[in-house]
Amino acid sequence: MGTSTSHTSEDSATATAQQRYDRQATLFDLTELPLELLVLKGLRRRLWGRIDGQIVLEIGVGTGKNLPFYPAKGRVVALDLSPRMLRKAVTRAGSLGLRPDFVLGDAQHLPFHDGAFDETVSTFVFCSVPDPVAGLQEARRVVRDDGPIKLLEHQRTSNPLLGWLMDRVNPFAVRLTGANINRRTQANVERAGIQLDSVESEKLGIFRLMRGVCRQGAVVGA
Ligand SMILES: C[S@@+](CC[C@H](N)C(=O)[O-])C[C@H]1O[C@@H](n2cnc3c(N)ncnc32)[C@H](O)[C@@H]1O
Image (cartoon, rainbow, N blue to C red; front, side):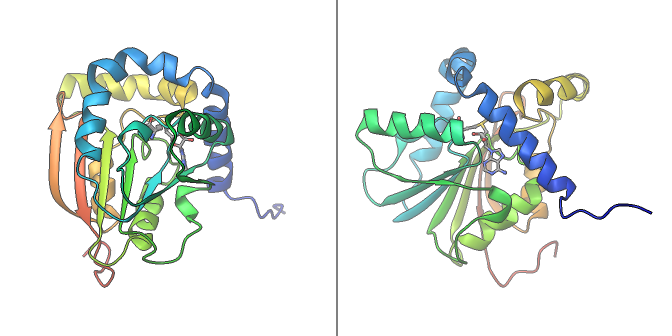
């Protein structure tokens, strides 16, 4: 007879993701520095230059690399799963003189009511969320009707050779960093019922700036 437990596989995958990010919080900014300076910083600036909501949710704030780009007006709520990543973000906000509201929480079960935000933003997060479609559906739930969901993500390239390589390397990347480098995040966004009205691809389609809208009445998958 099998044993019954209230622990689901999603719970354990989420706990593992949290541990992986807690573990790398101290060195996260340093290890990403070259890529940050060469590519990511410019993409962040592009994304955040388009944020104009009064109440904005950043999902997966990490160590707070987006904080320097936060809009001067309005309020940002910044959520992350990893207490140690979040602590780094709190310190960074203090040094920048910013006071967003920080929340420890899970993107797959956002602790906010329906339509609480004018828009949601995330950068390089849905490669790590164990159930990305559930997380994206939550982003959709907490944004107001017709509100935008803005994402900057990396994903599997459609280049056949590089895509093949990303598939081979992915198990090691996940164990080392928590990030799946071969996720098809744009497809996941669409599966979550978010209607994309803009997608900009960079670097062989690996980096994507996406803007979608959320129509609360729309049927997911329709
Ligand atoms: C690669 S880091 C990106 C951090 C930050 N957005 C950036 O651009 O530097 C991924 C972040 O997503 C967070 N994360 C992973 N799974 C999550 C979940 N289920 N809910 C909330 N945050 C999550 C991790 O803790 C980590 O801080």
